[in-house]
Image (tube, rainbow, N blue to C red; front, side, top):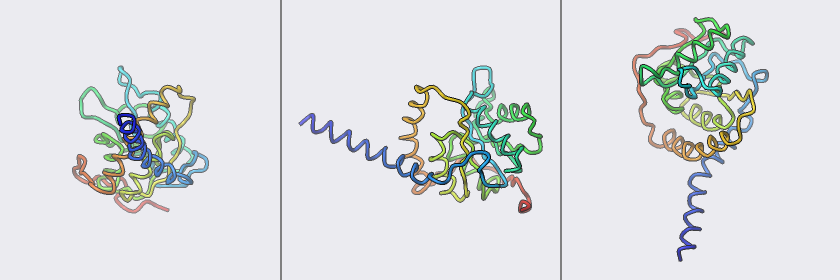
Amino acid sequence: MILRFIVFTAAAGILIFGLPRLASGLYSIGRIASVDSASQRPVAIVFGAGLLRDGSPTPVLRDRVETAADLYFTGKVQKLLMSGDNRFVEYNEPGAMRAYALELGVPEDAIVLDYAGRRTYDTCYRAKEIFGVDQALLVTQRFHLPRALVICNGLGVAGEGVSADRRAYRRSSLGIWNLRELPATLVAFIDTFITRPLPVLGEKEPIFPEPPPQ
């Protein structure tokens, strides 16, 4: 009886958490590109990925900023929307992303900061509602891109993913990140298609007051 319960619980867990991850993976097929093969879009959305103790970007976040900078330098995008967490004075993801992008040579007027991108859902929601983004390249690593694509497209931002995997990450880290995507993707589907919770909002700050030039 106990064994049967354990098997049933395990099977239910696989279905509940595994199916959304599988669905997002299938959805992302054909929607992820490299810098060279990416479509031209007005904006690249760069998702936060944590800071080191000294306040500088983590290697994962540096890879995202570098990839976004390449998109700008190759003319694939006109603006970089850098979105991250800034709930605390001493923790400023967008500011660290901006500083690194400036080091890479991205001009200041090409960078737009979103200080309330506390999670992927918030970033996509605010990109549409606050910054007026209708089309974008989504810059993050492949383990995160399926969820980001589902959320942004589900919220009305026509997104194409651009892989920011610029180095070989440790297998242990990749395992943890992919495991974390299981519950995160389930929550993403619920948020995007069922509950639609409101993130922190505010006054509208359109990146392009007029439609971007084609």
